[in-house]
Length: 215
Ligand SMILES: *Cc1c(COP(=O)(O)O)cnc(C)c1O
Image (cartoon, rainbow, N blue to C red):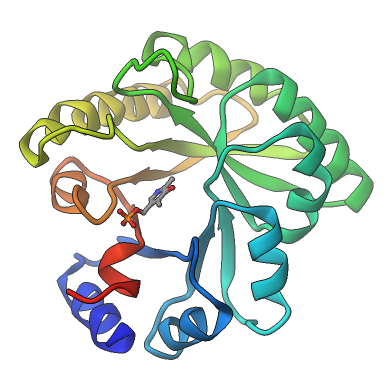
């Protein structure tokens, strides 16, 4: 079932779009099935889950997509190949420090609060350029793009608005060519919203339920 889900999604995605399998809540055996079917990118919301899964699964890239707490940054720096959810200078500074200790450069995406929801993480759209400019100064981080979720209760059609605004921000940033950035990735869309995200130019879609749960 997992294998079939992965193959169907991979067939559907246009060339150049990467499928990130969101593994939260699923055991390493399920992740291994997805990998055997062609997944090469895994998303984890929890540092501890990733630690466990990485013991048995190799040959794939790991992206952190959860809310990063300061006391987990050291482990996250060691475990992940990209952090998609950086939204504050404080977390970025800690991540930069830990990556320096590891002699590692970490690609990061800036999480955009495209729905402007006060209780949610992510930089407000009007603060993204400032945030990218600040974070681009950290020597051991490379700002590699933007990530967004969109409001949790949006209707499928409404996602277009939030994703389109995030894409326009991304394009604007690309034109600025800020030093310390290498803008390539626009990570948008989940099981309910990935078609809207593709239409609006996402090149990473983050899918959990459509891979790991029964249709
Ligand atoms: C859970 C999660 C997803 C995937 O959501 P599904 O509805 O399971 O596809 C994508 N991105 C983030 C940040 C998540 O936490």
